[in-house]
Image (tube, rainbow, N blue to C red; front, top):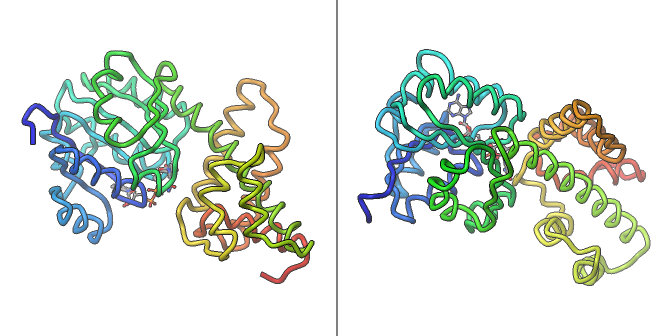
Length: 297
Ligand code: NAD
């Protein structure tokens, strides 16, 4: 293990944060974590990290602070206030927020952190739980080139495609576009699944051949078994995709971009959530199509 590696504080050890922080530990980083669930802290210590009792304790000696929490309100809760990151991190630290939040929250955070001498990158990810476990995430970054270059080795321990997209907030804007594409893609796959099944075609065979042609996608590769087995354990929760469809819809309206198909899919995601399926994986959009097609699921 190299002493030259920066000391990491990791806040938010959920579906994504746990495997990502463990990949940093495997790469030789010293990781101290804080999250709300004790069992996730226990998991971190079993993997070779250290558990902190508070955000303040986690960040105090850190060179780099990574946050991976659900949405803008949680990022604001952990960043601001007397017990938050900005009050307790040392000046010169680099704060990398990898949560998917509104671009404006990232811009505001960077501005507030700069007043404390803390540098910020927004660095949301795509690739899902599997991408996190396998360290093959796509990481879309907003912020300055110097900070991006400093963070690059850390990003490369977490992902395969790492791109600086522009200044603060740009990583989040690209992530919003990512979530639009993923939701529309899942919806199209779900509609194809119901159509194929009702037509009496061998679904597994059909999905295999579709995935080899222009209809193929990472969504189809990653979610095929979810569709075949009706296995909707998350993965990526509908609640979170609902949040992301709100982000992309608002951001597009701000810049005058029309998202007609995205708007319909946002409503289908909202409907699934309203029917009590917010905790399921986003491949559960299949249930909405099945219900619309007359099934009692
Ligand atoms: P999750 O709900 O599994 O985990 C969130 C973690 O944040 C929890 O461990 C929780 O304890 C922690 N947390 C919340 N509030 C906190 C606080 N005040 N202090 C400390 N910890 C706090 O969520 P997830 O699926 O890991 O997603 C995290 C982020 O990554 C979200 O923004 C999501 O949109 C994004 N994302 C998720 C996926 C995915 O497939 N799950 C993929 C790409 C991006």
